[in-house]
Image 1 (tube, rainbow, N blue to C red):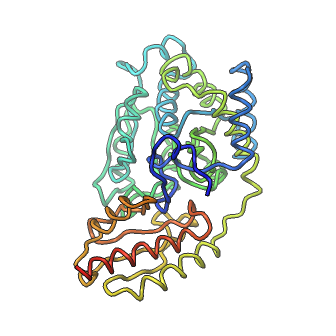
Image 2: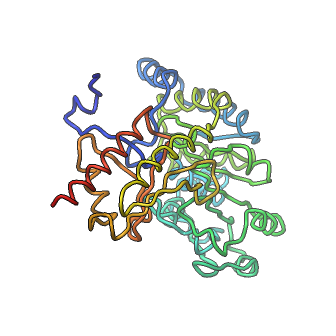
Image 3: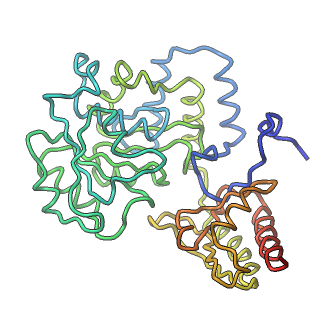
Length: 372
């Protein structure tokens, strides 16, 4: 069996059933993307010229007027925020995040001011934005948004994420209608989304994506949208963007991943088949209930949701999760709802047959607990 680079470092082997998670390295890239990273790392390039080429590739694959590569989606939030505040004015760009006296208020629905490993609020503040939450955590009316608009408003911000509250929020369509009515840009954080054209086609001014999630590229990101805003985004590399600059390797890998993406198929049927087989095994275990559930945010992802009941040898979902992560290999499941007894298996990062290893390990843990 081949020993991975990380095992050579003395680090534990991982089976990732959690998803395209930053904490686990996001994505495992294709040979073509990996080769782009290696080749770029061993050569030189005019970075401005490379970024200019990347702009065109981003625009081509998103249908946007222009684009901007970033080191990640979080950086994209800060850069986009700074861009709508400063425009192309260098003296203002060099002031950020000090935006005193400028139009710097960013309106966001309360249920979307989330923590994704970092906080949306902090990323916006890094870009000089002053966040204005509207509505309640589970209910926002369009009036809340409109009545929050002042002469200090720089943009409206929408977060499309499974982390965000889905219930009671106003739609992207409503946000677009309000933003256009008041001649304000709408920024959409679509970091983990898989359709790179959808929000541009809807009329969004700025859309932010991760390069290492649905795209399955390297740790990177990209912003796409209206040309004036993209020019302002790229200009931020003379300001706050300098602290989050994207290197030649990541840009090159991002370009190759974008060019490969239209050729990929999202195999929903395969996801369901693999997760159904997993559920059939786990449903034979006393105290476990396994079913197929679509992603909370409506993405084409079908996971095995495992409910750990009181009859599962007295084991809680937290205990089961801990034992899976403590094994060799360490198995990481999706655990956003572990506090209510639910853990999930995301099929996308799994290598062939790894769902069987997960089922066997869960069954073994339950059996060991029963024998005690």
